[in-house]
Length: 250
Ligand SMILES: [Zn+2]
Image (cartoon, rainbow, N blue to C red):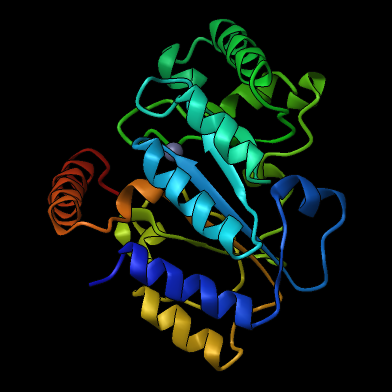
């Protein structure tokens, strides 16, 4: 079974064995290590799963970045504080043009308010767009008119990472090559690596095949330690994929 907490631990161990430096996104932007991994987590829902990831990393002296949405299914203040206290970075997973239906002015006000609310809990230096595949609005468009640096934000992965230099890999759709069919969670890159199962990545790591700089995006809500939840996620994912196919004919 793939995308289980057990498999996650195996993956983390094989990354540690390759002597990468685990950096938060903020640290990576300020001073990237020669061999660096940013473990990025989009906390779309089920924040307890993210807390589990954060604890496993902390037990292994590893840190990453966790992006929380300003919606009840993600925003758990106890968990936000706990994850930051474990040494991880917390950022804002914004979706303001989706929630404000494309209205830029309402969107930036919503952005400002949510960022302020998050900063009351923890320091926030970076943000990351939530893809909202079912929405026709792309929240990154907020930055066609406004600038996040005006809000003391130093980076957004989709704008501030050179993905020809940093290998990007995401568990979108509970497979590692699902970004090809993703609506928004994709980047322009010249890297030719492609992996499907977590074991494929572990095998590649054992052969030292992976590049020196990597951003891994995890959606911890897709990773389970209990088989009922694991199958529930599989069924939900299949439903979502068929809906996406209907709405986003490319
Ligand atoms: Zn998201």
